[in-house]
Picture 1 (cartoon, rainbow, N blue to C red):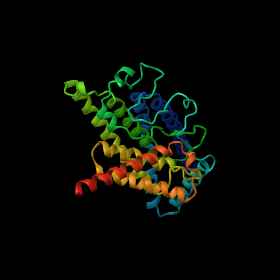
Picture 2: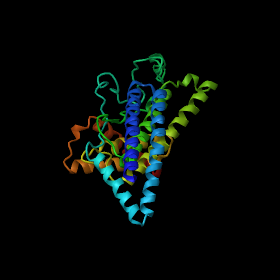
Picture 3: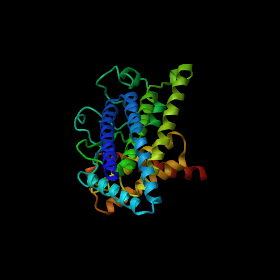
Picture 4: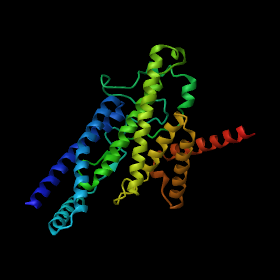
Length: 313
């Protein structure tokens, strides 16, 4: 009876995760189209699906660790074997590349450039006329490369409950990225001529809150990533791009929020990772964003060193 219950629970969880995958991928499409409000709803929906599943898995883990009799041992083995059967068939596969949109979206690396929209009624992006009013000061402040690709999950893959923590990490990153890009799209509309108006102050407060929320989510994602103690696709699909993208974007937000020490730490770690990859004969040409990421690290780290030296003089 216990084996049947375990099998049913695992089947139900797998169905829920499949639903969450579809929602996540829909959210990535919204991000690439610049529909940030819709993307936030999608990723929030995914988190609502995954949260109770994660709680179930945590309860099962606690029960398994606390069990001492043979019955508990048998149930634990049944759980493990059932999960292994699912996870060993088709591993969780992720991608930063959405083939259906690669010819029209996410082509400009500049922070102040907005992503084109297919459906104007859903778009959170400002119009071209409003973008044109971007102040010179803001353009300078936001000139660095932002990694804009959300994470897409292969919908044909099968998933085990053991991958919940990894899936949560993916969704947290996607949500953080959405808030980050939304804040940048709004920031690009701020002009110096209206900087003292009530509506402009309200907009700046909104932008600030978006950056802060994004920062917290990036930080949580990084903590989860470190706990995993491996790259996001370590199960035979090593992809260091996730580490670089996460570190880069978090470092940029620290910089925007004037948290210079944290920003410098991020880009120091990112540069060290890139140097390590090159030492390991990693093909940097396989990452089309490599140049932008490397440029960020060099520019920000050298500028910081120059500022410190100038202040000391």
